[in-house]
Image 1 (tube, rainbow, N blue to C red):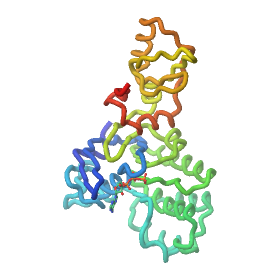
Image 2: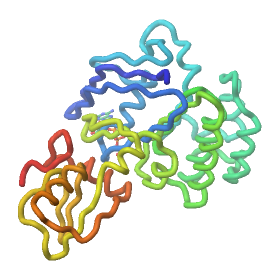
Image 3: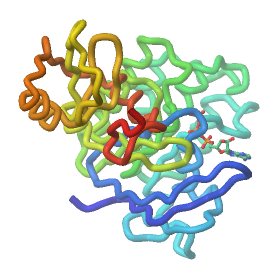
Image 4: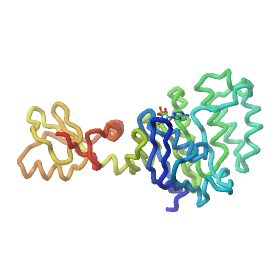
Length: 295
Ligand SMILES: Nc1ncnc2c1ncn2[C@@H]1O[C@H](COP(=O)(O)OP(=O)(O)OP(=O)(O)O)[C@@H](O)[C@H]1O
């Protein structure tokens, strides 16, 4: 598949914080969840894609157009929902829509009104007077209908109530039905990631941990229960050790070792996505394969 967005060798330092180096491509037709600890650089990366951050190094290309060149036609290819918008407070939803819609040739008026209805957004109230959750909904209703090939959402559901999160997930699944649409969504919500993502792009303190295919990642880890007979030695593949069990990132190596050494385990279970993300975001003790090295 052809990438819509390619980031090469990106690096940016902001005071004490360093982002990168980041090398990644986003294929057309995919959904990538951008996952990371607080302050890991997710918003900075998304702003960089929008050319809102001056890079120290690196190149970002959207459909082969460099985002910091003279050709600004790439802007029509992205719809971006930032975490917070500046300057919207004095305007009503109706006014904002009148200002924004004409800028986007593929604007979907029907989708806008559908979202206003589903989210029950009061269009006659000033943006600044809306609750944070409703602001987030209006922001999304003014972003998704732009129908750009690449949609970038920065923590779209952080203030939303539970039913609204479900409405948004369903809307995004429908939006992705159209061919060659691509979504990048920064999120701390495991439920969003589980439901939507094809890929998990994981950042930790500005460093890229990896870009993982979600289903492969789910199959990569296994938990082995030993009860009281948990062996005292470190087992190949072991990434976590708790009372009575270990978690392995290389189940095949783990089982070969256990069988060869005649160590019996009681049962094996798979991990929840939340556990896997926690392991990926706690990389202090791990080597590049994720295995424990300090035991
Ligand atoms: N304008 C700025 N001035 C100073 N530091 C900044 C600025 N913008 C970002 N940073 C720093 O860059 C780092 C990354 O911030 P960023 O907002 O990109 O992280 P994030 O992964 O989106 O965080 P969160 O999950 O908490 O939203 C943080 O340490 C932040 O303090």
